[in-house]
Length: 113
Length: 114
Image (cartoon, rainbow over all chains, first blue to last red; front, side):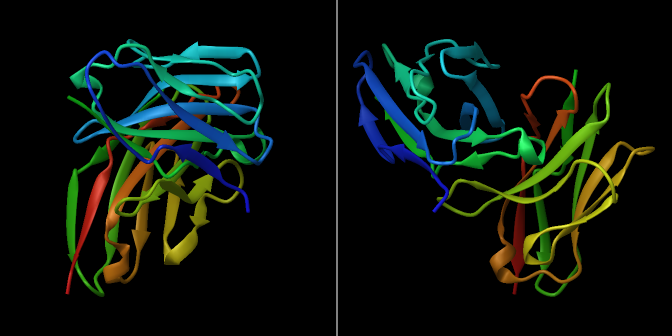
């Protein structure tokens, strides 16, 4: 089954404790992205990647890091989480065919206290 | 630059009534347009898309949208709402020939009353 998986689905952590949210896709897509979703603000792009070892900042990259060492994986790293990073996070992947329609993961709800 | 405006953060309809969710975009080049749906506690899934060709696009669950270039709109409609249509709906635009990065609207929450 074609899918994007994210782990963990729920995470509660404390300010300053480094964490990683994993994202993996099994569709051999070149493009992958991370978004955060906040009430009233819709989806905002954090980082995206056009291929292995190629990443770039989205609209709200501050406080986040990413890496793309393998085509299927695109982890999101919070080196020193802060309460304003409490949000719902989505990973997505897409390919050139179909106009880059995106396939989304199920989401990770992060709470930073 | 590209942008998306979804009119109305909440739309409320009765079961069986017409659903109309509005989306206007701006794009300097011909756009690719998408509608995504997000059911409670789930990720987004593609409802329908316009890339080229026929301007009236049919999607899943009886939804359709029409690309109107002169109005820069891509409104989503369904003739008869079901309770199961209650969800968050996002319109997105990507400029063809440009960056791969799509721009999303802020979303419209569809509420369906019995």
